[in-house]
Image (cartoon, rainbow, N blue to C red; front, side, top):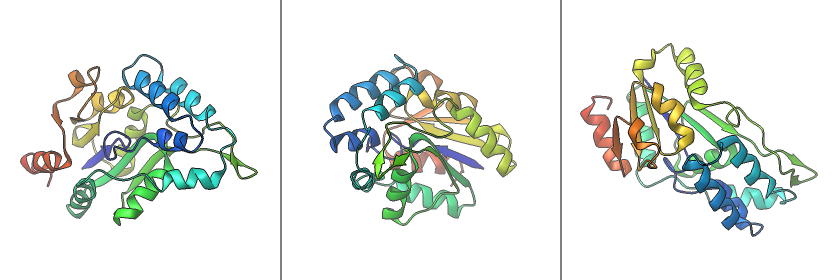
Length: 210
C-alpha cells in the first residue's frame, strides 16, 4: 500500500517558511500569507512565490540553521517506522523544502521511500528569492499518480494524510483520505480526521494497515 503524507502542518508542526523568515525578520509576513493559502483565499503557487521572494539574499548558512530547526511531531517517526516495517511505501508530498524534510527525518533516525518537495536555489552563498520544484504549480494528485505508478498500486490502495487546501487534490483521489486537524475548507473531503499521531496509529491499526 502507498501512504502519502503532507509535511508542514501534518508530520511536522514546524512551518518551514516561518522558520526561514525568523532569520531575516519576515516571519509574520510569511505566516499571514500561509494562512491565506491554507484557507484557499489565494492560490498555493502564488503564496509560495510571495513567501520565497521575502527570503531573497538570506545567507544559505542561515537557511540551513532554519532547516535544522524543523522537527517531526511527537509520534510521527513511530507511525512512519511502523508503516515501513509493515511493508508499505511511504511518500512525503510537500510544498515545503527538501532540506527541511530531510533534516527532520535524520534527527529522528527515520527514512521514507520518497520525498517530493521544492527547493530554494542558492547563488553566491545566498538564497535567490525564487523557488523550484514539482509542487509549485504541480498538484499532489499528480505526485500521487506518479508514486502509485512506481509502486504499482491502484488508487484505492492509497492513503493520503494532510491538513491544508493544497492537500485537497491528493485527499480527493486517495482510497482513504485522513485529515490531520484539517482546515475548515478541507474537512469535507476527508473520510476521517485525527488530531494526534497516536490517533493516526490507532486508525491504521483499526483499518488493518498496521
